[in-house]
Length: 44
Image 1 (cartoon, rainbow, N blue to C red):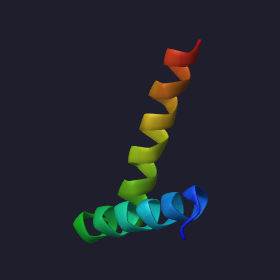
Image 2 (cartoon, one colour):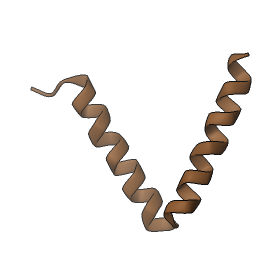
Image 3 (cartoon, one colour):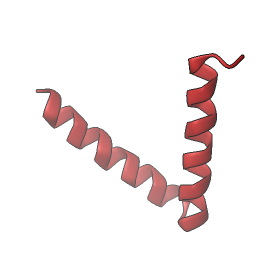
Image 4 (cartoon, rainbow, N blue to C red):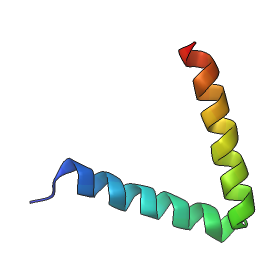
């Protein structure tokens, strides 16, 4: 049995691994910051 939290963790780990295979850690962080900023604007 897999709890939802564990399933999400595995999914995020896989997504980050894919992103890192296509670019650098700094690029991944920049993309996440951009997404977080955009998300914050939508919530206001």
